[in-house]
Image 1 (spheres, rainbow, N blue to C red):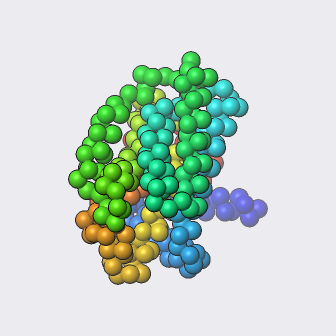
Image 2: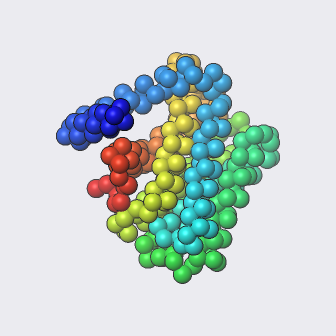
Image 3: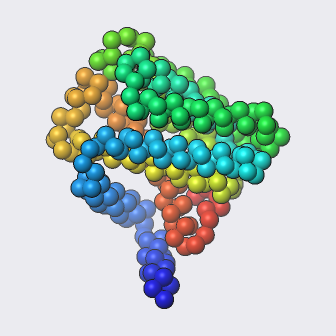
Length: 272
């Protein structure tokens, strides 16, 4: 009885929200995000846990993807190019992390990289017949080259090696837009496969947790946090913008995914 009443209230809320303009939806989304940040700030004392949780959710999403590949023996709906971009930025970040200071994040990145490489191997060699290359048509050079150029021009100054500085910046910029081929694939296919949808949603949750750390620290230090990482306002600002870009790229998908889930449905196509 209580469950039916709860579902009814949710449907009423979703129906009310769907009738509102885009500006109202954005405003309410920002309010909800700020409320969530306040709650997270109260609950989580050590803010470094946000990054750990972000990476853990990312690994969980990749495990969901691997389950689909091994269990259902098909890679339909999965963008190989997104996986290759993720392998590239993870390898870059892992190289820098090992050379600077190996820690928990290094092991998490290593686990993520192994998982992504396993996905790539499955698509390229085991499930090649179910991969639709024509739908995965975003050229990687349009993504990788601009990120490399910006990384050479704008990078942190605290890392001793100039190569490591540029490589770290490259991993940050590439991560921000690595999901674009996957979103493009789903738009071309005009449908969203169930496990792929769960995977992309996990990426969205992962990015929100990562962004939460930045926003809380910026608020608590009254903006001084911009100068604490990367030794330079310009680099930190660009890196922060890259984090926001990735969050907004995934925000629209996550909104419609949650909306469909609350209505007891599955998100079957990309929102227009």
